[in-house]
Image (tube, rainbow, N blue to C red; front, side, top):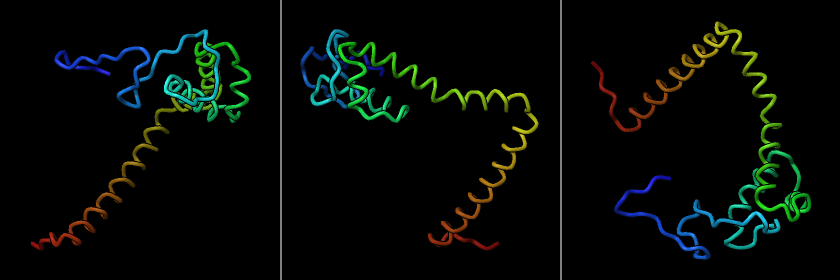
Length: 134
């Protein structure tokens, strides 16, 4: 996140975040627990991503991480996301070997999108009374 020179972001440790995107630093020695307060807001987002990519409930994740802190949690998330994305990456590699097929799929998609957009624009112009016959 970029800030201008005239309005630098200053936040003291322990101060409430000014935005939902800015998180308090969490020492890696801190035991992982389910997010219940300000200091654990970042952990909550990471544990949610881990939960979605593994299907394990947050309580199981918390038990696995234990005293490992946020470093262990992030390492676990990286591993889980790589495993989750592996089939998609393999499919992409397979498709990259056939550029003619990919170009055909893209061309058909463009044709469908243009047809849909054209019918939508016609409907919008009719609704707004902006159909001009020449």
